[in-house]
Length: 168
Image (tube, rainbow, N blue to C red; front, side):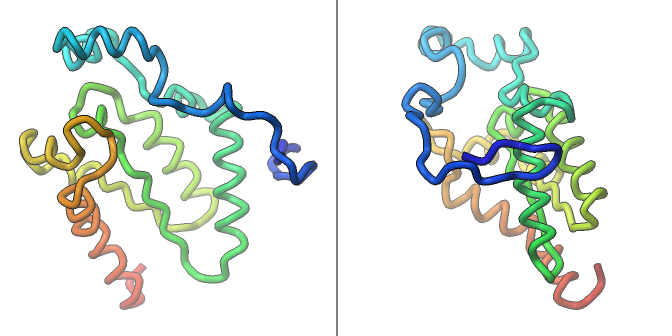
């Protein structure tokens, strides 16, 4: 277990507690999502309700974000080289059915604090047509397809090239 003490992680136990009830099995509101999907109303409902797939990023004081922030900060500070953090947008952000501003703000704040490079691929990915973006994930799976990975790589490549050339 790694409780958050102030802004530091401390290992208090090497044996994780029973986690069966905390494992993410596909997001919140599982039954409601199945009904909405079966009706074909997901995108409309997400827009109308301002669905937020990651409410943990809404506030810099959220316990979940504070833990994520501490993990990333400890990792970045432990590396002597320049670190690039690239948050991968979730499909509701790519589909523009959810507001991406909160998670993007949290990662911007973190990068400024740590002095690391932040690469936000969302603007690059949104330059693709909606039809192209739909092919970035599998039909019935939220994970990236080869096309999605390729689009991310194309977005990240110039950042890596600039770092290697010493321009960042």
